[in-house]
Length: 457
Image 1 (spheres, rainbow, N blue to C red):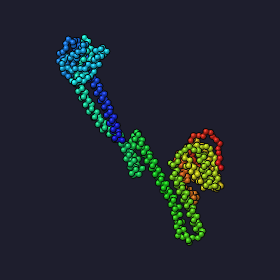
Image 2: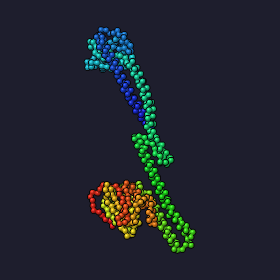
Image 3: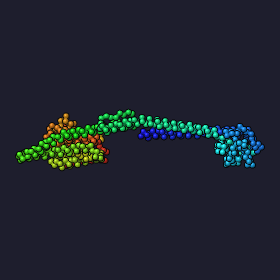
């Protein structure tokens, strides 16, 4: 990029210099030619204009002789050519002269080349029907123009070198932030250090790129820290069931023959329960890892339909549970699979910790401020106020729920899904006992018409 910027600056300045010098050279040339024309015009209107070329065939004009002097040639009416001096150059008699002789043109100016050199010629009518040609050598004009051209060529070359030098310096200075950003990106790639942002100066495009790079580093840092926290929490939670299963397996291996039938059944039953808990924990970990939803595209959907599907799944998993759904159309743009998983987790949580005789009430409706809301009300033990925010953390379980099988990840998945949809989730006590979990998500356009609530089950 630095080489390209330098080349662009050099070409631009050189091209401009060439154009300016060419225009200046043409202007000087035009001025010099105009001066020669003025000189020829002055001579043609002087005493020479009254001379009859036919009566004086050889005009004594020593000051006019020589390559830089004005030379005169006359074309008589009878077609003869008379020179003012034998040493003058014989000038051609062409269409311009014929036009002047015929009276079609009062005068004509042109440049021509003869063996003696280049001349500027003025053609005017003379006495007694003759045609006069006044010529002046352009040797001094051509010499001056060549000298000017050499000077301008030197100026163009100098401008090109200065432009290349200045362009390189300016490109290096202008690209310094880009080089700094490149070094920072290379440092991050080599050291994996996401905690050192790059220095950003100014509000130009490079500064905006630097700030975007810093935001990317911050996001990557948070993502990596979240991955570390998840791995550490998962390792901590997996350690206990794995150790317990290993102990039971070793007991079966080393003392299997000495165990009674009752002890063996209890031990196998414990192993089965622990394997189920471990399987559920791994499944929840996988769901939590996928909860960011990068593999699922957000589409326009209806939260009421998502809730109906989740209720059907919950009923299939726990046939004894009683779940009532009341919903209105609630359009939004979201990821249906992730939302369904979150609602299923809320229902599993309500069924697991509530009494078997309860009815879990699910409500889907609109909410003020252009949002949709889903609530799940249960009759489980009311969650203390100090725990209402903490229960959405990974592996957090209430003291009263430690005896109930579970991974402690269900509500964390709910919170992650809601955060990915830029919504909010909260839990509040339910009048008469129990809890109400509320999910509020940004809504899509309102439905064409408001229909009556539809009940499920």
